[in-house]
Length: 224
Ligand SMILES: C[S@@+](CC[C@H](N)C(=O)[O-])C[C@H]1O[C@@H](n2cnc3c(N)ncnc32)[C@H](O)[C@@H]1O
Image 1 (spheres, rainbow, N blue to C red):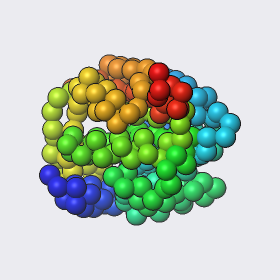
Image 2 (cartoon, rainbow, N blue to C red):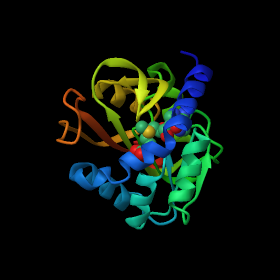
Image 3 (cartoon, rainbow, N blue to C red):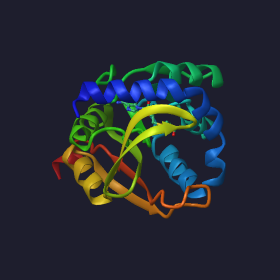
Image 4 (spheres, helix red, strand yellow):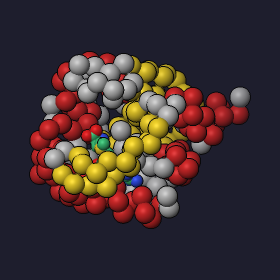
């Protein structure tokens, strides 16, 4: 799939579901202690002084952005879908949300202390993930941290229905080793890999969930 096609279909799908997605998922993290633990670890790591703010890439309605803000993180959200950004701004009026694509971020090099992609790369065709991870590496300051949440597996789903709406949406479940290789190829150093089983709230058959913590090496580390 071309980058233009993927961006168009994904944007259209999330524009369609934005209001119901926010309503259905706003409290989802409450029942996910392991997911919150990864966010808490990231929040602690990404608050090193002097490295810059954190961006949640593919923030949707901003529930994870708001969760990180609640943990004391200087964070803003970016999403492809203007409707998602509108919902995020309405739901969290004190926080910053911008439209944009993680395939080409309108952010300066080395300007962020952290990036989070929380189930937002799942729609990116795997052949375009090197572009996304290269963007994450570019915008991170040396020593900055990345947290990625993704669906574990080795399949491609096409959905015609989501959150009560007709959509056309592709979802890619990836083997952890493939994700690790792609991140390493972009220059990111993996610090932790958590793969957990589906919990009670997740439909049977939804599969395992992956959470990777990584960082961009500083000059001294890169030279070693
Ligand atoms: C499954 S939702 C996750 C939203 C949010 N992170 C959360 O957990 O609630 C995926 C989000 O990623 C966004 N997205 C997908 N591809 C993107 C891209 N290339 N750039 C920015 N956002 C993207 C979609 O618009 C959608 O809002």
